[in-house]
Amino acid sequence: MEEYLLKEQQKAAGKSTCFVCGQIKSLTAFGKTKHNKSGHHGTCKICRALSDKNTKLKVAYGIDLDIFQNMFTKQGNKCAICFTTLFDKFRPSVDHCHKTGKIRGLLCNNCNRAIGLLKDDIGILYAAIRYLKTAQNKSGEFGETPAVDNPEPSYSEIF
Image (cartoon, rainbow, N blue to C red; front, side):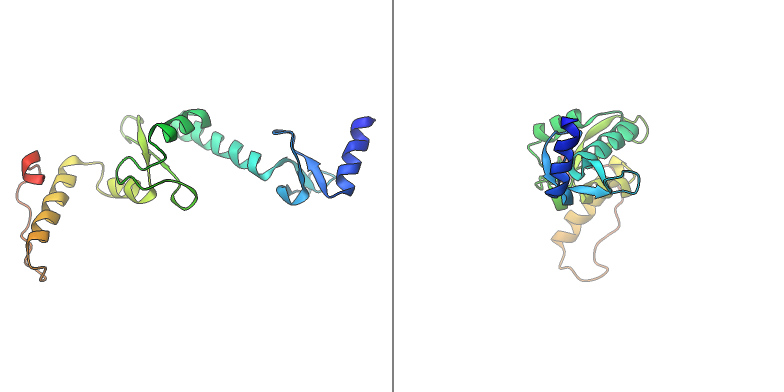
């Protein structure tokens, strides 16, 4: 009975308690639903988002949010390739090998897409590096960059 009165007092004040985090929050912090007589979810938007993220990580990569956060912290909250700080707009993408499913690290969306578009192929990546280095040494006029003959140059040729 006491719990019911507390809920009614919160509702009258435009507040509710999240079932997950236990915090009393404004009703605007809760999503709306027709499946609950209060008209709002019993879990706040933040807790629901974390739960959804955890579920997606488990289904797609076999990891949970704690492992993801640990990876994120170990990488200094930066992309493993370009070192862009990852947050909000630059959310981390879980990079993984499509053949083995093994997770390699966290990347910004651009780097993750780039290696995917290069088919995770080191030979193509070497060719792209060589192409860019050759183009950088040219005057920049259209058509002056020669085609790449050797798809896998040595490390010293690249750098």
